[in-house]
Image 1: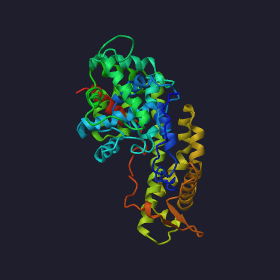
Image 2: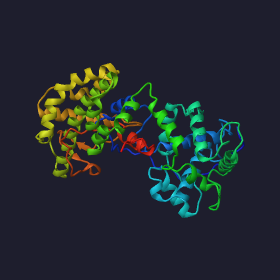
Image 3: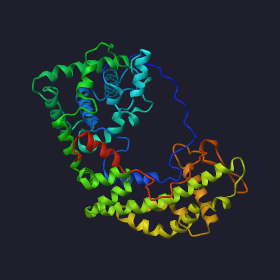
Image 4: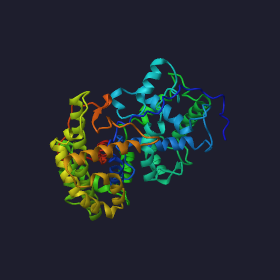
Length: 439
């Protein structure tokens, strides 16, 4: 272990875990996410710039000088985290705001610079392993082989070599000499000092800040690096990134996506020439999203009606008058078996049944409305770590009042749009950044 364990740096107390659960009120997101992962392994919806993969490769090369047990004096931050602080602060210091769109943590860095304090765990994202650029992009880096077991993988070394050649930084990785070796040593020294101080430890005049804007800014990848990342993304033995990207960058796929940014419309275009495996997955997504839309619209219409009723107790029978609720009470039970059948070849039928079985029973609209209410309450109770509050209060007589945080003046969308997201937008952003979208 490296000797960076100085007195711990105290941080502000984190707020208590909230009892509110303002996302996914019907519990349909996990299955949709599993289907999206099959579609585009490693890709997450929060992604926007593939060049963060290069930043991870650079980070892995710089941080290989430190032992696996190395930790900063705050007893929390690892070397990769310190490098991330430098990168984010460097880009904020040396680029215009429009050139760092999609940079996680940029607002935190801007505030720290404005306050004249270094970036640190105290001044950075509360959960960097989830919301920092390493947290967002690391799974894709692992999927592509850029990172392997916490170290630079073979794909990562090849990416780094292409980047170094493009940037005139030969010697940054490998054994060959070159101008990149001095740059790498400068970054290693900055991370070492950052570990000791548990914060970025360079003045505003440090020449190293320019490295990040000159060589790692999100929009400035050069030809060799871009081609390598594109090739890695298209090499997808387990998923369908290649088919999706190739369709997106074709004239027909581009028109389908740009018309309304509708994933359903794009998937319809994609389905026409899809391989058998992709067609099977798209059919399952189509069926699941149709059912999810029915349930979501019914629930949103209930919230709208409860909002309209204000503080007045509202029985489920009043909510059952909604056309969306009536439609869902008829169609959801009728199509439940078909959705299960489409998910069965993917191994997701059991999860679907366990998640939504309570809505599969036939009944009158008031009976189905009560099941929808119970399903929401059960979904909230099961959320980690100890459950969340439902979005409304239910009284002994069964009547309901919506809780203030969830009042809404919007009904369901009442259309065929997907409820969930399936990675088209980040792949479209990737294709644009890499310059492979056809004009």
